Amino acid sequence: MKRAPNAEHYGRRLRRRPELEARAAEVSARPPVEVWASRDWLVQIFHDGLDGVERITVNRTTLTPRGDRWADRITWDELQQLKADTGRGERWALEVYPPAQHLVDDANMRHLFVVAEAPLFAWLREEERP
Image (cartoon, rainbow, N blue to C red; front, side, top):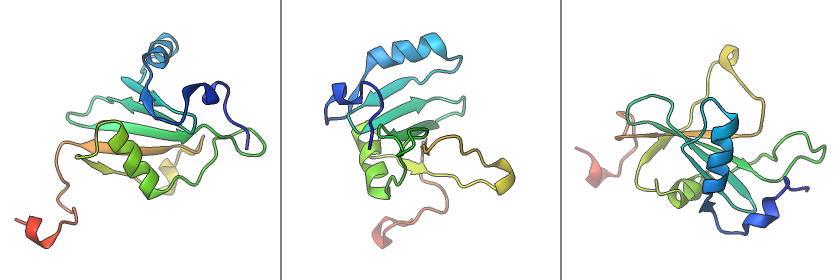
């Protein structure tokens, strides 16, 4: 598969990229507050105005064979690792699946919403339950 331009430049290790944050701030009205990149991943952190909630947006840097979309098939394990690699490994995150009429599927990106505390419906080990 073909990689996005400059993806090879970042190496295998996911690292915060202030130069990409500055570029995003120049071109976006609501830029990410953090941008992390590696050869394989682009991870952006947004504060969307909800108290205690961050949105982690993840996409691969490889493109589909047609070259018109990011490659898909991001696994749960990969999302969990990327959440940890961006310093949020000890926090709860949720992924949302909206009703069909609210579906937006412009790119193969995944969105995790990092929340301040465990949701009421969280699965906990027996010894962790109140």
